[in-house]
Length: 143
View 1 (cartoon, rainbow, N blue to C red):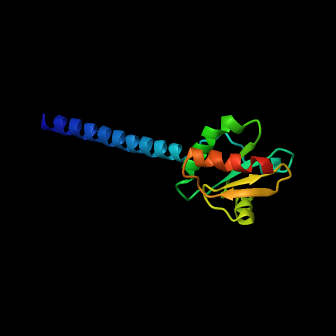
View 2: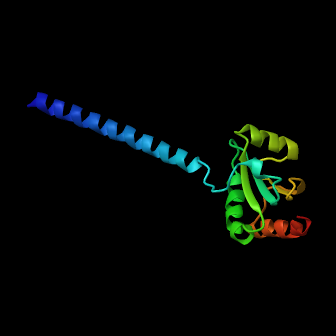
View 3: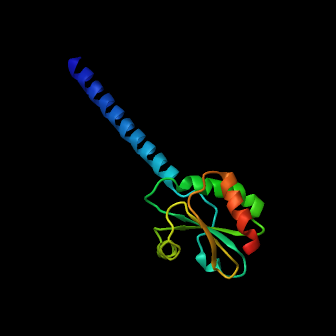
């Protein structure tokens, strides 16, 4: 009886360990999924300078904070989608690195470009949706 009890405890402890490991892997996977970019904005800078003004946000992959700017962009997008292209570039891509160097911007910064692709204005991380809306509205006449 003692031997079967030991075997039963050993099997149940292995099962518990497997369940704990699987749970930990699931949590890590969920956290990594949440860190993935969640934007529908294109990252194709080849669209810049093709006649449509663009608002481009730089996202640094190793910096936290730009996700707020991204959320703000998503909120104002419906108001400006017919007038501006909204683009998102990452420093994990050579185009993003070159964009950051050219415009001297960092994570969460925005660059407003006219239809020819020339920079009209630059803004660091906006404090609010209203600040972002004001930035775009202030410079719309220059586009």
